[in-house]
Length: 437
Image (tube, rainbow, N blue to C red; front, top):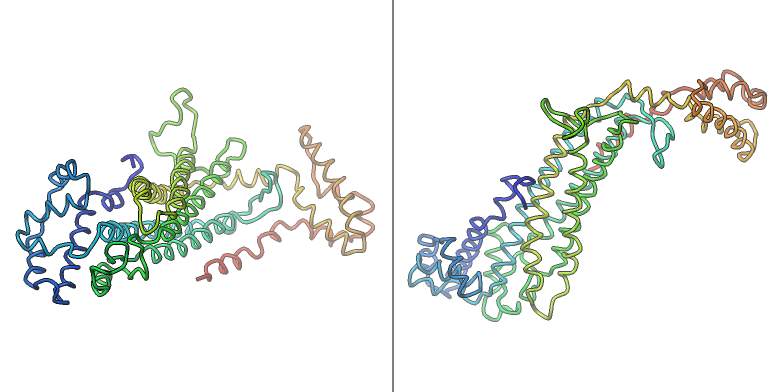
């Protein structure tokens, strides 16, 4: 992934130094297990740990000739270890190293992604609690519906990220398996005890059965989960993009001192962070389909999955990690315009009270169909008046309708226009969100 959308903590996981370090540790732990089983001398296992070194540049040079990365690594490693190098990689196959290493890297990447999700949740929690009492208009189909709490709008995203965290933890646990089973996964040339030892040493579980490669449905689930997390990020970003539109102006992503919105128009304050997050989400989701297609491999192994994973495993994890960091900053610096929220809420003359009047009429004996027609006809008159720039009030209009006045006493009708009615359960809902484990 390009440096512009990368964090050092995540890119380090995919750099050659980390990869070769993991390769070495797997080989060295396998030597320890082989030594305990009496297959190789214990002194040889100690020598591997003591003398084992590698040179990335030389490995690259060797690979140009061998066209095999693991053999290039082993050839270079043998230079530092000496004669005891003949005991390294005993009974093992390249996939034992490659797949177990990928498991370690994906587990390391998942740890950072989970932390990133938790950071988002932490700042979202703060923003929910400071905006829980702000009444805003809720929208369906982009059109004013009924009032809600601005904090509850944010709370729905908090709940989504809480679910994302649980899914990502499950995906991390599923991918964290070790396969040291030799050619075609038969254990014919290596004792299963070696796999168990390496798995424990590397913080992994043993792969119950591997056909020389770790089953790719594990990877499929991992990247599919990341795709869901990316969509959760985009869902929040899209909300901010709408709220920041000039016609809405209820909330805005942070706009730094000295920041410029346009090369041509000095007045512009564009939602570039939210738009960027929308784009980054697409990059992450682009890894999902290839991961699904990698599940089907020929017999016990082929390498059609290998080139794909070398590209999208680093790119997708680096992108998602960066996106979570960017989203955290956006949420933390987000500006909420209370007066604009109030102005938008009042802009349609209180039409959002229509359902409460509808229900009041049905409770007084009017059929729902008749009540709907009656309320709608009054509401549309207010709607058209406002579109023509004339002041209009739904409460005044409906209160003056004799059919309504005949059925609903004035005091009861007045109660239908209590704005706080719509947020009376907001704190209870938020408490319920927080209680979900």
